[in-house]
Image (tube, one colour):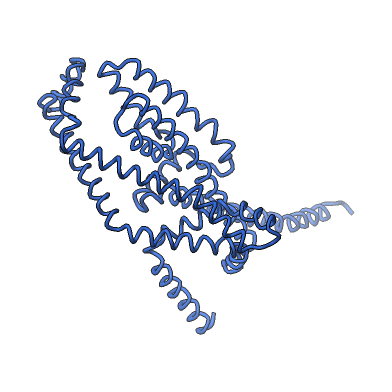
Length: 373
């Protein structure tokens, strides 16, 4: 490699890092623009054919469809969630919702062995446990209030990110095909590997968003409506929480509805508790098994333990976007190592084939030598 070429590669790497550094403040807008472009690109192609090959008009219509089907409902839910969360926090702070009274009721119906167990943990009965729980709840409430206040203060930043996302999404629809070809030609890999990586990326995005998110939304809607019908406070808030947690395999929405069912049983609301268990176990729990195969398929489904770890890690690193980024990185990791293993097997197979003619020749010469004249 010449000095000029090495210098060019170093310069290319520095410029790329600088460009990525510029995009970091708005990486969420870029990420979701790419995700929505991948999800709605088949719709864009159909609209383009319907409009007689006009990509700009088709891009505008597809963008309008995204706004109506995704953006506006998400903004409405977010606004309602902020309002309900703030109202719940204020009602708890003003003792309109007396958590202490509820816990005292719970203490009265708890069996004796639970009180003995609390004593064995060196907790002076239910009072100290409540003190610790209330302290944790107040800290969590203050964090939520601080987050809501921060969101209110950063409303301008939020709408700037939203505008950038929609602006980028339009050009991804209009020029997506040409941008994809340019990207495939620019990646320093063989055409076969590039095609496999691009296909895997698109398949995982579709499986994660179209499959997991739709399933989670359905489970959250059913759980929220059940909470509302049973008269549980902040049904919308708990429904959204169940939607988020439903993206975690193995545990999912049961983190919310199972404690709610136990609480209803402990306070003596047996009918409501039974309804919650039936809906949680036989409706919310079975939705995943019914909807995942047609929406996700088995080809792009990660093992449950990989999906759980990658989703949890993605959330801790990237926030809400980690629900998509975590499984996406894990799927690309598995895909890359699968390609590497396949390449190693092919090399070993080629070496075996290259050695076979020599072995056959050596065997043939030995046979000729041993053959009597």
